[in-house]
Image (cartoon, rainbow, N blue to C red; front, top):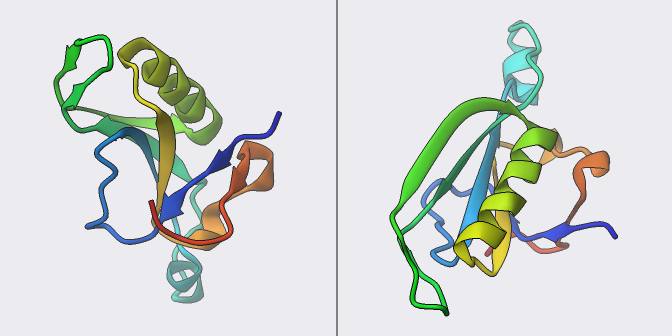
Length: 110
């Protein structure tokens, strides 16, 4: 089954009920200015969370860099471990997403 992720490109949009996979790299604009292309890399982070079982999880950040498939896999493991209801994506630029990583929701926003 393909995952369908909610996503955003807005740095100030935070999903308080999710593990967030941040994805960045060389944007199309950067390449147009002559910078060398770099494969997208990911980080994983989340806000403090009170799970339905009463478990308290502190906010944390795993800067990586991770390759994106590894980050998505790790985020899913963390989601289950800490009881978050979802994994969401924070993209530097929409065009960085690859279909083999999963599917993004049609509309941007958490």
